[in-house]
Image (cartoon, rainbow, N blue to C red):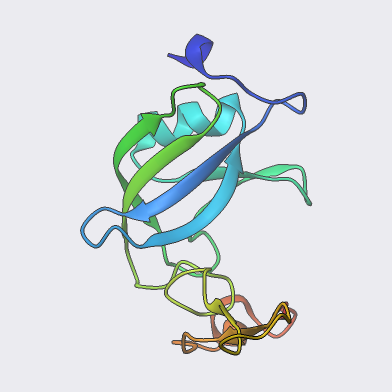
Length: 138
């Protein structure tokens, strides 16, 4: 199975995590061969942190884990779509249900590029999920 996956030059593949019942895209993360194998064998999402260069089990700090329902490999073998059950209801480190909480807003007929507007509420303060050291990126 691993031999058919086209990892990039850093040994990683992007993974789109999608809610299996609503089809909402929850987040995009990365896996290496080890995290992919652990995900398949455990049935829970395990990713690879590019910034920390370590494996991380989704929810290990926050308690909001992802139970894997299915994995699909795209036609080029270089992107994985993973359908999950998001346990705890929060997929984003900002305390939101998903990571895609900013929507491009443009004035009708305007040639301007517009602006990003926050369109999803925070469900739980990130400091409650991760402690006071956590800072939200916006």
